[in-house]
Amino acid sequence: MNPNTKPTPLLSCEGLSMHFGGLAALDHLDLDVNPGEILGLLGPNGSGKTTFFNVITGIYRPSGGRVRFEGRDIQGLGPQAINRRGIARTFQRSRLCLELSIFDNLMIGDHNRLNHGLIFNLFQRRRFTRELEGHIERARRMLATFSTTLADNMFVDVGSFPMIDRRRIEICRALIGGPRLLLLDEPSAGMTHEETRQLMIDIIGVARQSQDVTIIIEHEMNVIRRITDRCVVLNFGRKIFEGAYDEMVRHPDVQEAYLGGKGEAA
Ligand code: ADP
Ligand code: MG
Image (cartoon, rainbow, N blue to C red):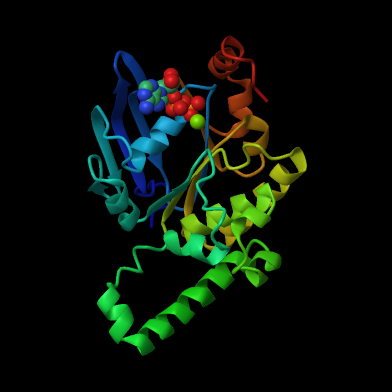
């Protein structure tokens, strides 16, 4: 391939808008995401980051614009259909079932593969058992990329693990169906500085191990610095910057957006 040709984007948004009444949470957003990159999505509170994730994953139907994933339109599809196409996410607030085991929680994330009915489960016992063993092995391997303690305790209730492990489990749950695009919405919210540092190392590890997964991570600047290939900054639903981290922190529009907001920059 000619080194000057740009790769075909994995995700491509054109003029993407999301209105809530009179408020434009996303305002004609154009954004391409390249295969294999880790893209940092930044912006002051209320700038539209979570809304962007909600639109991409089909939770909201956009008010306007186009979203293409692997060259096919996905705007207007529901969350399950989009997940089946290969986009997975974690949420800003944890959505794990604390009273269920790690394994059970992971299987909820793998429902696309667990679509046999009761009849199959009852009458094809041997195949069912074999498939279940496959799921257990896959879950164990996935957990082990983060922590052997999690892998060794996957039948223990999620509620008995600390916050950092719960985040790891959530990320495993998003990854277990083998998505090509992973959206992480403030993955270290509510965690200490040290836990955040550790989780970022884990995320880099995941990206290295599964090189075909593309990650968009929504976070504060200081967290994003070490792990992203490229940054995009939103303000009032519009893209005000796209480029390298070092350039971003110096950019006057970015500085003003943060200082004009709650002064959270860097
Ligand atoms: P961020 O994740 O960047 O902090 P959000 O995407 O959560 O920002 O919010 C962007 C804007 O859209 C905010 O002004 C927020 O109040 C508004 N918003 C988000 N979701 C809804 C909704 N379901 N109904 C009405 N307004 C919403
Ligand atoms: Mg948010």
